[in-house]
Length: 283
Ligand code: ADP
Ligand code: MG
Image (cartoon, rainbow, N blue to C red):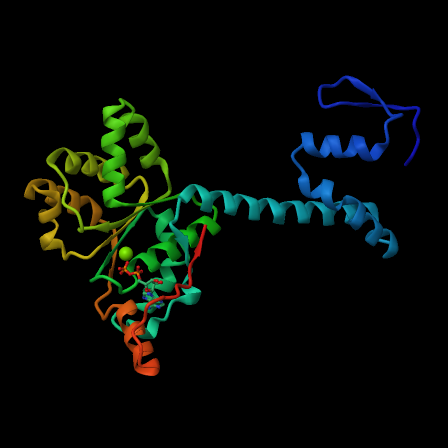
C-alpha cells in the first residue's frame, strides 16, 4: 500500500508522482469524485474490515452503502432547504383525535405521495387553527423525503413575488420555475384579497400546473366564497375547474387547536396561557 515508485493520474489526467502519501492522494480523488463519506470513513471502515477479515469487495460495498445513505440524507436536507418551509412539521406530532372530522386514512394515504406522481391536487379547507398548515407542511416534508422537489409559500407572498417579478421583467422565468416544481404548496388562500392583476397572475400559476404538477392549497374559505379574494367570478370558476379536476379535499372543520390547548392549560393552571410552546423547529 505504501509503494512510491509508480505514478498515478490526477483528476486532470496528469500523472502525479506517488511520493505524496497515498492518504493525501486518496482524499484528493474522493473530493474530485464527490465522495465525502469515503473520505471520512475509509480508514475507520478499513480497520474494522481488517479486524473482521472482511474481503476487499465487502469493504468497498460497506463504503458505497455509507456514501449512498449519506448522499440521500444530504439531498433530502437540500430539498427541505429549497422548499422554504417556515418550520418543519410532521404528522408524528399531529393529534388526529383533536379533529375527528378529518379523514385520517386519506391523510395517511396521501403521505405516501403517490398523488404527487399522479399530478393531483389537495385542497385543505377549514377555519383558523385547525391544522391546515401543519398538515400541508407534513405532506411537503414527506415529499422531500421521497425525493420530490417542493416549494412552500402563502398565497399573499406568492402574488407579491409574482408582481415583483413582473415589474422586473422576469415573470416568465418565475412562472416556469413554479410550473416545474413537483409539489407547490400555497397556504392561506382567502385571508387577503388580490387586485385584478394579482388574481390573473395567480391564475396563470394554476393554469400552468394543471395536469403538469401537484398543487396543495389551504383556505379558510369555502369554494363559494373564493370570488371574494379572486375578484372575478369567471376567473374563480376557471381556477376551481382546473384545481378540482383531480383533487382530494381535506375537510378540516373543528375547534382551533391553539384555542383548545390554551383553554385546557388555563383550566389546569388557572392562568391564561402566555407562552404557547410550539412543537416546531425553525429551520
Ligand atoms: P391552520 O393552518 O389551520 O390555521 P395550523 O396548522 O397553523 O392551523 O395550527 C395551529 C397550531 O396548532 C400549530 O402550532 C399546529 O402545529 C397546531 N395544531 C393544529 N392542529 C393540531 C393537531 N390536530 N395536532 C397537533 N397540533 C396541532
Ligand atoms: Mg395556516
